[in-house]
Image 1 (tube, helix red, strand yellow):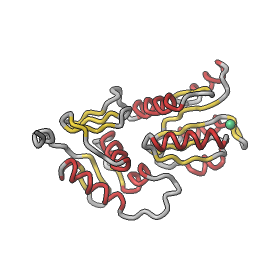
Image 2 (cartoon, rainbow, N blue to C red; image 1 turned 45 degrees about the horizontal axis):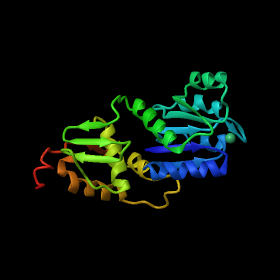
Image 3 (tube, protein in one colour; image 1 turned 30 degrees about the horizontal axis):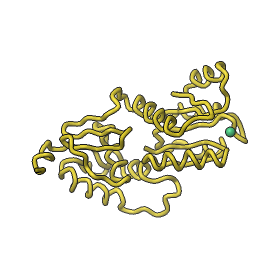
Length: 227
Ligand code: CA
């Protein structure tokens, strides 16, 4: 998913960005509240928000974030560990609150949990007919058999399958794949869609003409071809 990281500590910021990128997320990292505000709205599924920023308090961003049509999940990441700070952060609209120092795997797990709640999902595993996706293990399976996917193919499957009732535009899907420094991308979504159709069947992803793409159906015959 696409994540905005707002953190002014260079070492911590790059460590979090790199870890989340390895976990399959497209991460935009900014170090100031003003830069974060300039990124909004931005098709983010989640925002990891430091509170002590050089140009203001991260909490001041929450109203702007909440005003979006589809507000991202917000996970506060801060050294402020008093009970009153945590209560204030959560009451201001944050979905979770992590106190520094913290472990990167826990941050990634909490991010998955808030994203899950945001998507209205309770189960940690996504099940759609013959398809199952386990975001914690990064495993996509068809009829119980793991399917080999590249990081970008995986990100695209998760984006589409997490909201099977929605049509996602090409821009939204590009945002899932690339951070802001994406450079020039052209037709990349089409390329991955056709690769995924080869792996899951032509009906797995529907093209909605003039709008974008929607998850379709995966036939349950994936296992039969195997010995
Ligand atoms: Ca800070």
